[in-house]
Length: 266
Image 1 (cartoon, rainbow, N blue to C red):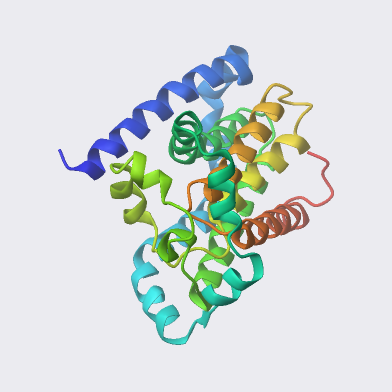
Image 2 (cartoon, one colour):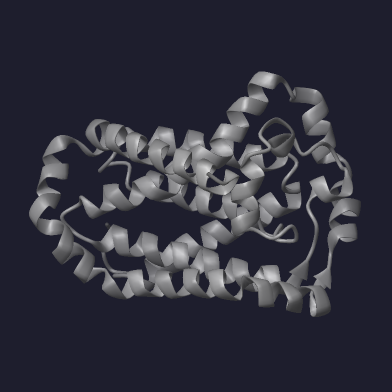
């Protein structure tokens, strides 16, 4: 089995197990049971938002190589500017805090925790009687990917690991992860950090829906914060990328609430 398929299989198995446990503990069996006859109608109700997200993901997957070429030819070259702006912050972060235990934790969070963080809200909000929150989440995801793809095309910038600012801890301690990340990312896809923007998006939704899922809110905030730190600790993103990702996330959440049933509270 190829390294890519091996890592992908482990992520899928982890994701299925974690969704099952979290579904029982957070969504609760009663709501999960209610999905038996309501999942299809609810998905049908969210078909436009699902289609929009699907189109954006398809464009990203198919056009990533071509857009990367456009970025290399015409994109704003901001690597030097970002480095001059924040200096060796990433290197300092690693030197100050790096330990084998933290590296293992942040590497796992960056890959496995991130997958769970993005997938669980879909299950949780699909289990709600009304599809408003689910549709808002899908729209927010679509905006994140669409705007992120546009910015990746407009900005040509390398991450800290490509300039030897700090150490690429993710790949140093987990070389097999490179097979997965290289399949979905380009080395110049750094501004903004989509790991940050999507994680903060999920955390924001968790806070906004804390009355429905009070146990999910602290877990989502913790995981999202861990992912944000991991992007820098592992030498993948600059602090500037993280700030840009956070702004993008909050903007996408705001837009989703403005577009999908703006008069509804939940």
